[in-house]
Amino acid sequence: MRIAMVSEHASPLATLGGVDAGGQNVHVAALSTALARAGHEVDVYTRRDDPDLPECVELAAGVTVVHVAAGPARTIAKDELLPYMDAFGDVLADWWSTRATDVAHAHFWMSGLASLRAAALTGVPVAQTFHALGSVKRRHQGSSDTSPPGRVAAEASIGRRVDVVVATCSDEVTELVRLGVPAERIRVVPCGVDIERFRPGCGGVVEPPRRARYRLVCVGRLVERKGIETVLHALADLPDTELVVAGGPSADLLSADDEARRLLEVAKADGVDDRVHLVGRVDHDDLPALVGSADAVVATPWYEPFGIVPVEAAACGVPVVGSAVGGLVDTVQDGRTGLLVPPRDPAALASALRDLLGHPERRAVLGAAARRRAVARYGWDRIAAQTEVVYQAMVRGAVLTEAAAR
Image (tube, rainbow, N blue to C red; front, side):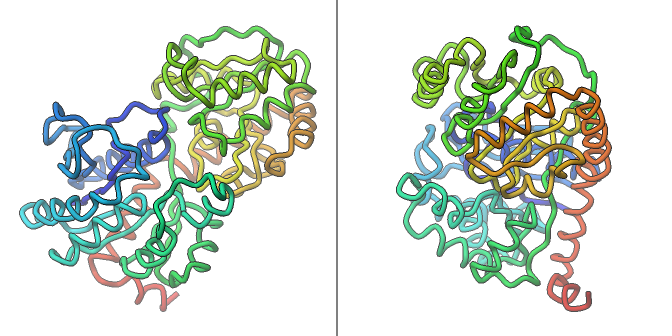
């Protein structure tokens, strides 16, 4: 098959850790590469945000990144891209008409709008993965939500119009059905992890060097909803424990980052600033060594559509202590591969971490179980095979028929 991956703001070529660069970039790159290994041709369409970018770049054998001219060729926050989606869709239609595209997979809601516009002109079937839903974002962020007006209604419409919605976790299915998306149009395929790169004992130079008996690691964009403040508050009750936070801008620009400054102020107020290390953006190739250096990886977002970091930690054999929200409820088996606590609850987090850090045998058992589960369920070749089954049903026009037969 020739597969069109549409990821309007999240390029698989982007440097991770910025405001709009994170799990979706990794997902699109890894899924595309795994599908190409299985013999498919994959074109990834993303918006041109630099005039010097070539129109096409080979990401890997069988994977071509196409930079779409839609709006100014400069960096624009994803919440400001909606006015350019019609132009994006028109370019998609031109490409699909000349490259005999079999199926399209849109990532994020605005990619869905562009893909459906192109599909109306070309007849290409469309799958949709939202990665994050506006209804959930609004519920948790309230007036701080910067999404364009009409996002929730648009997502509901997209979900009803595409051939299939590929959800990444069971919690998302419930939310989609609440939005009016027919359950028979939804398939669950989780995000994956490179189980060869992320593995126990992968080695590598780790910065910063350990300075305390125990090490906790948080990885993710520096945005308030990631819940790093909760970890800082918990750290006050965890003596001889340091916290390494990877994410955000490069280390030399952290002092100008509003969220980094706020977190350091919180750490100082809690009296833990000498045990908190914000290291800024870490190259994805360097993450396995950093994650592997932790006694536990902590992921305490207010909400999380899926969360790739807990799966990467599991693949490294490191237990995760995480919020019982969204995708973490699927990826972290409480008491078996890690621990789950209520979101925004520093006392519960501190209690869980104190028990885990104090029992190295338990950490080892949880970590080993996490690794086994990551290998069995979340390797990218397995995820690509599951996704391919969905695509094949779309091409046959059999998504609804197969659902009715189950």
